Image 1 (cartoon, rainbow, N blue to C red):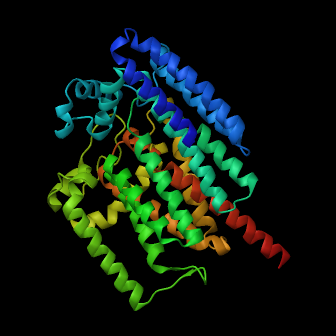
Image 2 (cartoon, rainbow, N blue to C red; image 1 turned 30 degrees about the horizontal axis):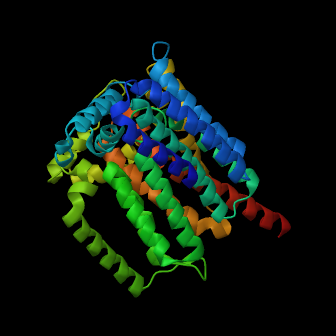
Image 3 (cartoon, rainbow, N blue to C red; image 1 turned 90 degrees about the horizontal axis):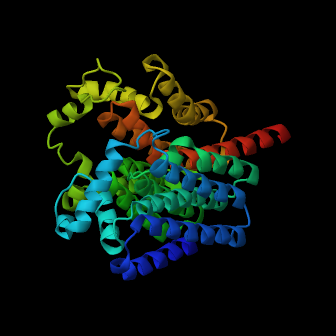
Length: 424
């Protein structure tokens, strides 16, 4: 994947040099993407020995969705491609025309600013902006592949997980439209990759890198910061020699110290890392955010959280709704049914699989529990502020790598456990 990204950066550099001589930005964008597509296919064919067909399929399916979003919208408009994507694009254009906006808050936030800089350098080439999302989406699939390889997950399991990652409908859409979702998804997947490297090899640099990458993901959307709970739990309590969690005065003290350092970090950089929650200056505003309803696919309309007890009781309920909405009882028609069976069902299945087999993961249990703890903490955070199925679907995309890697480890763990029992 690195060579593929280098190839794109070289093309962008050439476009920046030729910017003043370009009259047809759209036509040139198409040529640039087609040239890079040929280069990408060659790289996959030559350098990828395993699962190359899945990676090529992941790439070209996203590329097809990209061209459809831009040139076949009159036939069908993808969910989530509309008001928000147009807002991000218009804000990026505004930044490209006035770089002083980089120092000011704007509607499109960091994603619009990044694309604004790109458009400033190469011109208003929307196709290129969305093509970057395509490459980010394929990179996520590749990172999942590398993560499972480090864990020595058997090929049959890896292929199944990669097929889901490559062709999961919402991932295809989010990897092709002009939305920011793929940036935090990419950094989350890379963060999990380095966490797994640390879990396997115990190199402290890997866990530090995973924390930094999670910070980058959090700058794009603060909700993913919940993953840090699983990171911290594993870092402090996992004992590699015994492959178990061990608790002691030392580790508990270290946990408290880590919380203090994390709190100080938020004091200095919280405006960036927790920008999405920056307007929650007191508990009443937290309640207000949890009770906010907007859009046609809202859920739990009668649920009101106005005290700490209700937050503790109903917070988990909102987390469940965030993870698997639209619930059948809230279906408004065929679109909601399709969304449930093409998106929600993945998260529901993985959660049920964990609960049903939690005693059958054997030596994989410590990693399974750490990954599941990341999911629980993150969907709780997102669940508090989300009460709309459409918004939940978009935000869940950021956690797809985490869910799929967990699924791969659980399937492998259960297979190994069953084999040991049968040969027992």
